[in-house]
Length: 409
Image 1 (cartoon, rainbow, N blue to C red):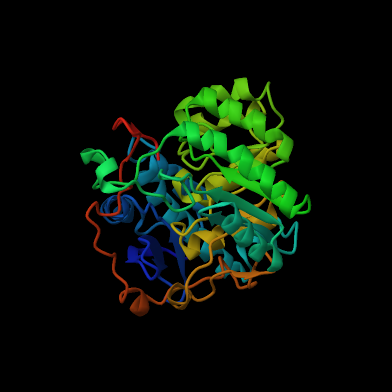
Image 2: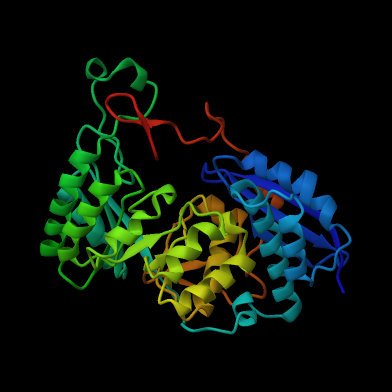
């Protein structure tokens, strides 16, 4: 019966992205676990929550009691949920699953019921400043074996999510915008995206599955029109059509188009995602696993989704650590209702810091079959890559419309 002796945070940024890892140690010196607690815009708040509040609460507990620890820690703050507390809890929760897998001598996916598939198909991110560059980048991924490609293209003169930004010249940019990102306007974007997919379908054909991320930036009524117009291009899914605050609009758009909808990147509690799932208003759940509390909550969410025909598509960018990607993969392999996994190709330095980072081959993510989450952390190497200096300490800079109004990122 291993007892928890220490709960520590390890902060590192080998590729320049702020990552927070939780290490849970036990009274068996060789038995420890790692979990992802990365909230890259507020990492130090998570560190405080882990070290000052969760660690004292957990020392001496039996590391095998994952569910009891999760439930007790979840309500220990009384006011619960939210990205800071959930990421702190996730770091502990994933580390405890890692420990349990090591105790059992098998990958965590085996503890969840075993494999439903040999590997997890990935979708890649293709972008471009224009149609030609976007098409070329999409083809490069297809040549590498990817069958799913997310496509984003810059809107000339505006800051455009996922594609790089065209900027206005200084004399045309209002003074309040010059220290921030280029401005954004939804109208030009909504007119361009259908033209973009018309071109891609003609040039790339029907064999590739195309995806797109609206990233909650468009007013709801324009977003509904966009979803309807894109139906003819047969997207694999359209992501974050609305902001979480506008969830009720899913009831409206669902009656007007069969474009598959993915949602959840910003969700942090059950009140946000349970209604969308039970009423069959979305097709893919896109949560950032550490933001909802870790593997314990995500496996329950995936099981619920299965009964309502909703597939998984866990958030997987660079601000999900390699430990978080390893946790994603355990669920991807074990969940019958897996849909797709977002990919991120980590740099060589990150892979050195995190030996065992899941491998990408032929457009899919493969397990290394090691016990637990299958990943480790070289703390001496991690210490060589401290958080980079940033004027906003990692915060997302404001994005504004031409009149200066701040919009959702």
